[in-house]
Length: 156
Ligand code: 5GP
Ligand code: ZN
View 1: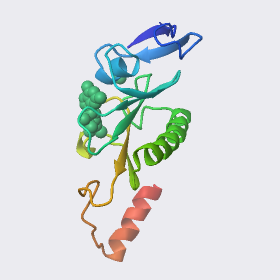
View 2: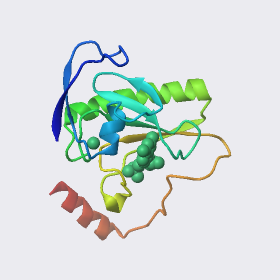
View 3: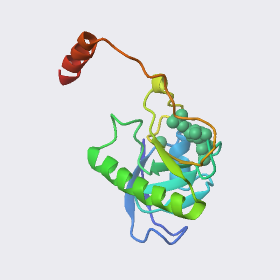
């Protein structure tokens, strides 16, 4: 982990200096902070929104914090609140500018959940009528006792 003083000289968007916690060995740190070229569609002091290199649909973008957090467990709650605000801005923009008929917001945590890049990111995936199925699962029916037991476990 290293601390970097970001000056904003490169794109003139950022203005005053801020401290960014980034990892040099993390591709999303490098993309988010402009160390590696990315197709950016939004940038501010804390976030970069870039086009996914292998999109699930037309306009699939990723919200990346410039600070390195591996996943939902590491990222501070206040940063997640900002991520969700930005997700709405981007979802509205994708619907308006690309004519998306729907939007999926996906966020994977851990290998078991399909996370492949271990820097927190939110997928915003525009959907189009007649497009391929995605973000699907097999709905299960569990006995009430099992649902009760799971409810108790979650409540702790
Ligand atoms: P995950 O499975 O971790 O939730 O999603 C990782 C996403 O990052 C995938 O959709 C993948 O296509 C995208 N991705 C991986 N490497 C790069 C990259 O170097 N640049 C960009 N723009 N997207 C990437
Ligand atoms: Zn990172």
